[in-house]
Image (cartoon, rainbow, N blue to C red; front, side, top):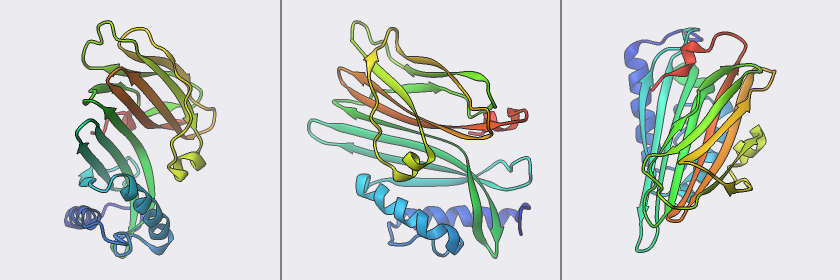
Length: 231
């Protein structure tokens, strides 16, 4: 099927197979499920990711079909390492829309994504209040909130936009930190005038550790209501 909705069992079977392949940590988990145009680039990113997070666990499920009829998958990744004096936890959620040809994924598109990496002496739970999709040219709130009171702790943070090239390189960007008032980072940002995807990276520094966040926001020219909530 091309651009349409595949039978339910096909999408469920595909998500189960992809989850199994990714968690097996094999050399090339994408070859049997993605077309050749996509598998090689994904393989490179996968190996770089495993080098940083070798104990990552993938959970993949079917998401709601997109308004144009394409199916979607919700891809969740978790990684936790608890050592004697350091701790890190990775949480990542990505929704992709795609087309199927001969039971293989072709022309996949990232609809929305975020990742939260916390490290330090203990986990630092936070909440994100950021839309998944906005109209071109509009201003919107980008808020990262500590879930627990910070009391008298001094915190700092920063936010920068990322290019597609920076995202693909998967390198840590340099973010200038400034003192923050209140329990988190609260910014108003603006969408570009051209439809596409806007990428952000942020860091919060707390006496007990660091939290780094990446977030993609879909920039659309029509009402984004169908894309705002999908989890």
